Image (tube, rainbow, N blue to C red):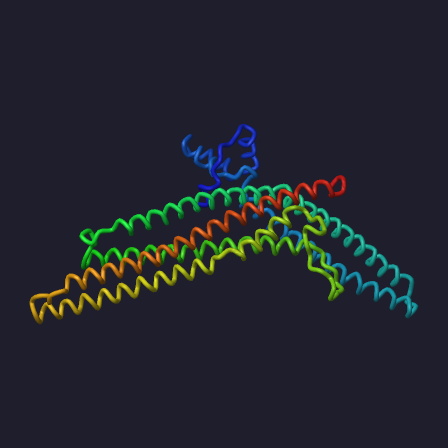
Length: 360
């Protein structure tokens, strides 16, 4: 569903951006014309998100290695400086002092080279973050907005359908016996699968957003001194790059969605279905016992059976209606959240463009 929500008609200028996506280019060489259209249709205009994340990880790893190497050099430099001071204090020979001094100078040069490398890698990461990752996240937000608008229409249609189906039911067309048991079992299986899939999808999405937001927080140099009155970092207050605003708002918005309420309603509906199936099994067993004993059903049994069927349908309808209503509310909240994130991200982009220093 997410992939389908990211469909768009690509213009001539946007097609040229596929050169930024080596995965799509390689795939187009290996498939037919129709397959090529399919691959291109599902590529992001801003380039391959996977490729960007992989390259960011590679550069982050290189940055980590450089910082670690610089730290080792700094420790050795401090040790040699102490040794040089000790040699001066003990009035060692000039030959010994000169040798140690040469080592100190060499270590100092290596540290300067390492720091320049760290700065260069950091700037490269920042450039990828702002010029590749941010447009991809904006595009993803736009796709999610379209997806949840479509999902809202679907869930509303489902709600209308189940309401009309319930009110137009007829007792003569109600399935009985094993047929009803199979229908309930299939409904239970489908709802259970949907509940698990939704939980897995939502948890994965929340983890993905939180991971990117947490990574961005590591890009911020926090002051060492702690102050009780110091306010927490706010990307808007310090006019940070707009990706900080987008990911912060997205992370907060994801946590505010009524996912727990939806999952609870699904679990409650599943519990009702299991109870109905157990009740149905007990009734079937009781019916078999009565049939064996009397070879006929007592008077009024048909009316009692119809009452049970009507009660069961009413219970299923109430539970399913509640789930669909919750899905509607979740979809509405998602649409509102993504539109809000998109709007505030654009405002942050405009503000940052006006306030950022020249040449940045």
